[in-house]
Image 1 (tube, rainbow, N blue to C red):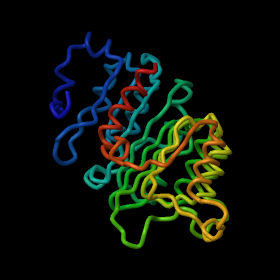
Image 2 (image 1 turned 180 degrees about the vertical axis):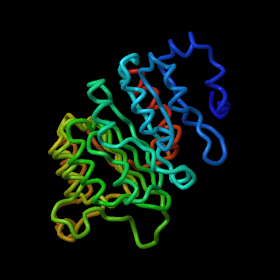
Image 3 (image 1 turned 120 degrees about the vertical axis):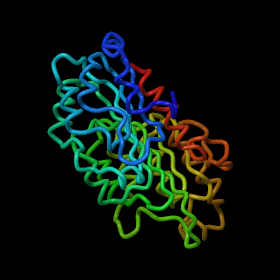
Image 4 (image 1 turned 135 degrees about the vertical axis):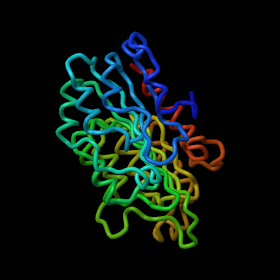
Length: 296
């Protein structure tokens, strides 16, 4: 019930209904200020909850503790929306610490987390990305604050055993060009992500510079296991050496080499409007969150 749920909605449910509910999504609401749609006390009644979707700032340490109680079935899917507006209105002070995440994972070895991140500063991301989060999917969308190479590097090191989906979007209008995550680094963070995260099946990038030779490296590293590689044409750049070779068409060579690496026909995304992941990130997240939870 999008935009209908209020802070009193869940308390009006009878105990038998609360006790049998398996899926609960409380992402979309128009509640002003720092109101929350569910409290830890309220969550105690939802003993059969297998999947939960919440605003990240509403998922508190106390909630994490409740979900590890012996009378609760193991939570298997947790989708969290981290939005700049919410972080500014509320706080990150009450979020679970690493010990809470360890306890949740002990309670349920099959717990997986999906993060959708809108315009969050790097210093806040460093607080959010606890090492013990079983992070399977992460989707960054930026209008003001770009993701740093250091954050991508951290994700690839901490979540290499879990990460399957990585989406990186930037809609900032900047005449100086797209941000380059590989700036002043020996290795490109996206290449390292492909190397470390051996379960990666989906990589989508728009609005960040992706060098052609790095794209070929990503395709070769993950091969046919990388089922989806979506990179917008305007995000791809070529170094001078590739452009100077008169005998090779750099664009055609890129298409051939990436296709060869993936073991399937590949081309850059020419029409950004054709992909909801780039044009309607909110709607894409809701759809993906539903399929993510239906898997259980």
